[in-house]
Length: 262
Image (cartoon, rainbow, N blue to C red; front, top):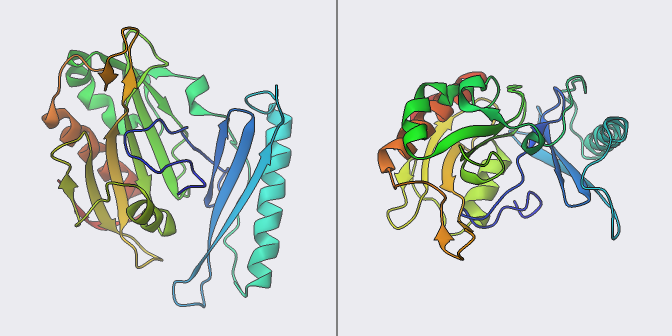
């Protein structure tokens, strides 16, 4: 999870996008682009191989690559993963294509009513969200193959101001979140009583680790230096409603069952 830049639930995290139809994700921020792929070794009793590739720019580097550069980087990441799979005895690499490769979801915010990707499940919560001052989302294409799916709710007044992040983690990424993000989540579902976090889990094919679905408040500071989640009021019911909708839709895409909700 350190590779994804995620070590604290209330910190800002760059939203991820799917690596085409490959079982991987792409992350772009601050002059650096990275990719992470989860390859399942079919004959290794659910063993997995995580391949991470990263390219960094020096001072003054552009914040995101051009589409052609992004595709070249993604192709290198996939080729590296295929070679690594052969070296470690993963007999069947579940391949894919890089069609539909997109950049950072943050660059194209849409209204909650327009959500059609990883945030689509939240459309029915629009009226509740607006009461909290939320009206936009950062979303990626809902591929059903990405091992991490993100949806970020931002304020109605400023589409670039995040308030809540919702993420679905599968396989080793779920395990990584549980082990490295503190305070740690515990149990199949739960609510962090002294924070802004709720979570759910589900049983998914191809892995013994339960998928993890998490909603976290993004704590920031306003112009007056006041720290907090940028919502008009606290509404625990909305957080549970939003996570439930998000988790159900993501779990269905990944053919998961036994969804345990908070």
